Image 1 (tube, rainbow, N blue to C red):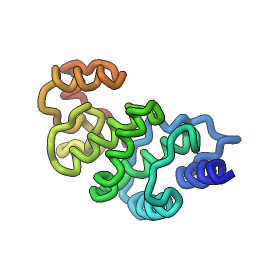
Image 2: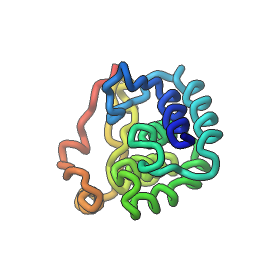
Image 3: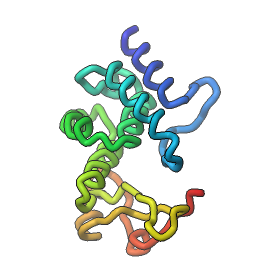
Length: 168
C-alpha cells in the first residue's frame, strides 16, 4: 500500500493522470520561466515523499521513477543531484533503474558545473536564438558515443552537435 501511495503522489506532481493520459514522459522540455516556481514546489514535495532514498522501479513503477528524474531535471539544485546520483547509479547497477534516466541526471550535473557532458543528453537555449535549443557542450564525440553505447543510447553524429531545435 505504501508503494502504491508513493507512486500516485509522485505521478500527481507531474500532472499525469493515468486514466486520461498516455504520455510516457520521455520528452518533457521546460520552455517557460514561470514554471520555475512550480518546479521548486514539486521538488520540495517530492523530497518530502521519498525521504532520504530513491525508490526503485520495482517499488513504485516506471512512471513514478521517471517523475522523480524529471522533477530533478527541472531544477538547478546541485546539492540534491549530487546527493542522489550515486543512489541512481547503484539502482542502475542492480537493474532496478533505467540507465538512460541516469544519463540525463549525470549530464544535468555537468551543465550545472559548466563541464562537458559525458552522454550528450542535455540541451540548452541557444544564446543567439531564444526560440531554439542546442546540444550542451561535449568534449569528444567518439568518447560520448562509447559512453552512450554502454547504456543503450543511440550513436550521435556530427550534425547533432550543431543542430538547433525550435521550441517556441
